[in-house]
Amino acid sequence: MRFSHRVDTSRPNAISLAEQQARCDGVTLTKLNDSNPTRHGLAPAGVPGVYEANPRGQSAARRALADFLSAGGADGAGVGGVGGMRDGVRPVDPDRLYLLSSTSEAYSWLMKLLCDPGDAVLAPKPGYPLIESIARLENVEAVEYSQVYDGSWMIDIAEIEELLDASVTDDEAPDIRALVLINPNNPTGSYVKPEERRRLVELCARHDVAIIADEVFYDYALEPFDGNARLAGECGVLTFALDGFSKMLAAPHAKVGWIRVSGPDDDVAEAMARLDVIADNFLPMSDIIADRIPDLLRDAVAQTGRVRKRIRANLATLHALLDGDELGVVNVLRAEGGWNVLVRFPSSIDESELVLSLIRGHHATAQPGFFFDMTANGYLAVSLLPEPDVFEAGVRAILAAVREALA
Image: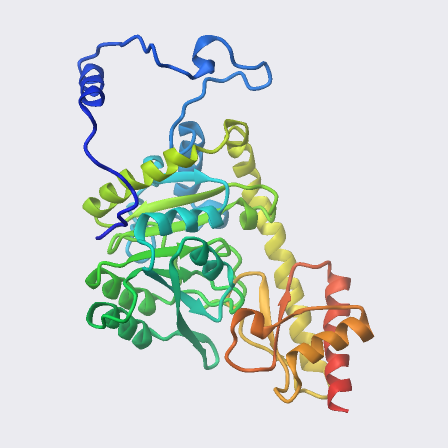
């Protein structure tokens, strides 16, 4: 695996090596340069602990998170899946976890780790525009790969293979360093299917390309197919699985995210040595936040279940309202997971005009499909989170606006 040249992991200097040897020999050195006030009785009363300065985040918080994930996380499904172990459960190693403020920050760190300026990552289309925006900030190109819908969403693996081959053979093509998989994707709601996963892991391993697996919506299954699994813990290729409290707790103001690193041992060791450098430069998560992680994890199962109940009930309401509509021209694409769905209406109606008519005539709004790079007109992205009466009124507003547009 090739990593970016902007992360300096050069050999430590003679002083650092001597300090390291002293530690190995059991010698305690008086640190005349120690500028950590919490180790000298100067911590404030409100934050009394000793600052650990671990680039991966507070060790106690990472152990609590590792225990939570090893026990099955918020869905209780257990560790493993394809590429991992489920029956002789391989526990999550806290040393392979990085705590940080958000999955957005995780994307930024991983692009620094994997990509030199001008390199590229593969990102799904349709998809949330965040990846492209972060890539631009990191001087990295986001190259789109397609998902196609035929009763369910499927990844165009042949296109990905062509893009990976071209990055090696075509001097004009950018060097692709990572494949971003959103599991399940937003807004399509599609999980990575077992056969897709097998083929993509093989392709990435063959091309020395890492996988960045964003699994923040994983626990919110709606109408899934059998056999889907988290990519966290994948052993076949260097994999960085992202998750966090924003979606798990339905608390976007709880800015806690994490990266779980897995894959071949040599690649993992090299990646983590370099990721430590990045994390150390940006400093670990605040202990004030990290101290709350164990308590928040205890709330995760109940909170995720509460959200899951709401979105499944609203999806049932959506199906009922669409099935009962006399016009019968609006439907919802199969939503395997997540908390957003794609509603389809006749493509003769312009998406922008439909949203404008919702705003002007029904005091409602929605996101048109082109916000997510849908390849055709005629889609709205709709959230399943609102209170049931608000959600039902919103769906009825969409149906009314479509009737008015076709009148």
